[in-house]
Length: 271
Image (cartoon, rainbow, N blue to C red; front, side):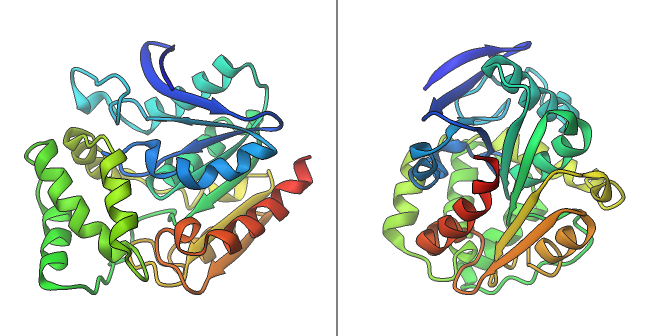
């Protein structure tokens, strides 16, 4: 894992394995790629997998002004990573907020896309999430979505409580391991949240022509299947949908074996 000059910034990037190239976009914003690596590393037996922290996130360089961070910049960074790796076409996997970026990437840079995987994400925030948790968890939900995070420590405190509702069956040991690995950046969460008001790919999804796999957990309240997976799959012409019955926002953790069976079976078309 190294800080690598990509375009006009430095991104914290790591590539593992050999084979058909896959780039994975992490969620958040305000988090980093580390929550993906223990799980998606299983793909590195067959594929070349690249993870990186988005600009302004994790250990990548931080902009002087986060107002300059937008979807165009994030997508341009992704394509600069592709060029840096020397690939004409890649498979892109996006989880959660990474799925927002992945949708935009597919719309804008479709000529360089081989396949698209969207996990627990939505095409627009035109619905009202319905969380169900303890008083403390509901308080964290309210804090995350009604006020800016004061600093990185505040963001970490809010997220480590909020994320418990993102699992169907939360496991403290899993949550603690993810927390210990994560580099939290409050300014990135604040800017990422500000961008959601303008995020809407509904009109452009029918223009995505590559094979697309859309997946989510049945119990995901923040990006529920009816608002996300089913709607996206109905709009992208060459899309397949899969719902995991015993997961919420992290099916690749909660139903690891089943998730990667579905994903690997779908990926075989590119071998």
